[in-house]
Image (cartoon, rainbow, N blue to C red):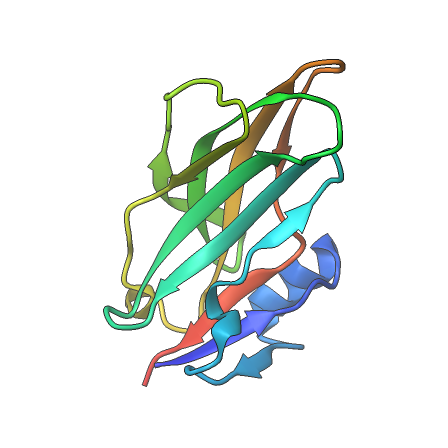
Length: 154
């Protein structure tokens, strides 16, 4: 199985690339970028990844939120993590992890169970999660990084 990763090209571009297979950057299976976090935010970092278990050739969605040192003092949590597959017509949720373990002072991490991506060859996969923080200013946001991941199954 070879790993492919669609780079950050905007929501429309990512959907087009996922649907048409265009603009996909090939990453060798031995590279460390297979499961790299995509993170956003300054005082509260929101990160997501489609995590590839190389030995089992499986995917799972992972999400984490961190209260960054030196910023505001926030309590954080990540909930409702979803591994999704782009079906050509839209995103289909494959796995969900509710992760109801509550608020954390520094960091929270959650992940779904795994799927065999070769059951849907040449599909792209994405992560959706709800990231929450509270402190000096509060917020809650459902966020998806502007990229997706794809595998080519031999």
